[in-house]
Image 1 (cartoon, rainbow, N blue to C red):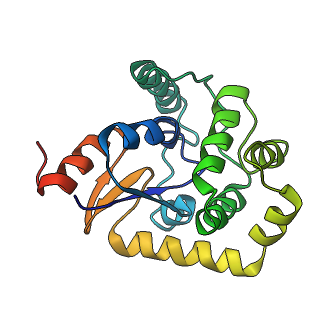
Image 2: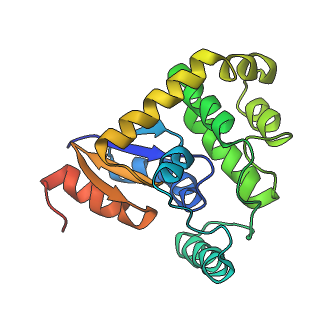
Length: 199
């Protein structure tokens, strides 16, 4: 079966639904998923796509929809969560460093739990340090490296790659150039990875 690239951005609300269930989902189905953090805000701003800011009716729907879908998956969330995130790039630079070093998935799950269960914004303190300590990482070291110009450039490069592939929102799943946008398209991406079609 073909691997699936999971393009996500810490800062995307609907991504919480994928992040909180993906590790178990992958184990149960035996699929290969590669986690790819990027800066969705940069792409959305370039496209003048601001989906919820200043739109109270749409925002209320989003929070209710997330709560309903979380219930469907057996996930615990407390919404509305703090949104938007002030430090979205840093949160994703930490995630990208973690993917390079092998602890990224654990960090992303931990930081989303703190954001959507405890109301502690991802990318800010105390979420950053507490999430890193929880997974056995030294916050001072990680944050020093993650905030470096090299990691800023690495996240920008990943964001450009996402844009090149046609990714415009998070979460998105890409299978050999085929883009599936939204948490509710995960099953379709898996079907495509298995058979080249959506069943």
